[in-house]
Image (cartoon, rainbow, N blue to C red; front, side):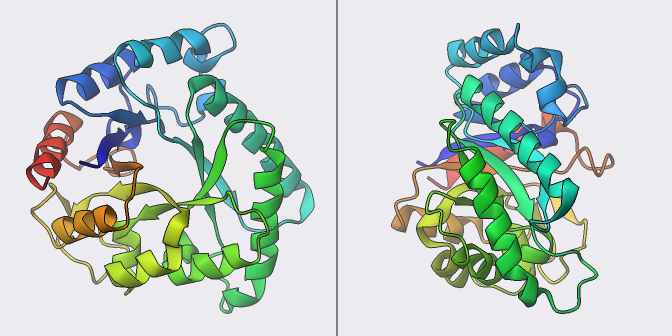
Length: 272
């Protein structure tokens, strides 16, 4: 069976203890760190400070929980200007944290601004920016993984951007809902992303027609073809984590983590 994790975006106000308890109680294999105690700036949290980060790592290790990915808020839009210099430094800080935690990936976003009417002419610059960041974190035992998200929600577009990068270690976080809602089939997305697929985000919704819809439902109750997706991952010998990403922080009215996190694990195990 594919490894299961949940993003702490799904339980954004949990403490480290609560995160571990939820994962252990529901037999998850790992946890994707995104929020802790309501904050996403993980590099500034006490739990991940120089004096406590090793203890935090040990707490997950003692619970037999992997940390497959550290989710950052970094958005790569250009390789130019002081904003990019600051982005490089923040990426290094997250890579250093991920290495201390034993996590192999840091997730970033990329893509031209939403208002850009002809984004393809910017793809080369964004690909170059991704390369520069991936190179900057090479001293750490961590890889960069770009999510299918925002203006690069289509796997084909993300693949075009990454074709301008010479760094072969760059991975992809495949957010299935984003690719489906932007008109790509499972097979087409898998073709474009290929061996770069390093981590997966999964959740369910009633409609696949609108990428802005917030009609999220429990896994198996919507239109996401989870069973077909899992078969495809297995056929492609995917060895990473399928991570439940419930956007609870952004949408507080969604069902509570105590309901949906156990349900996701139970449903996904039923597909094995």
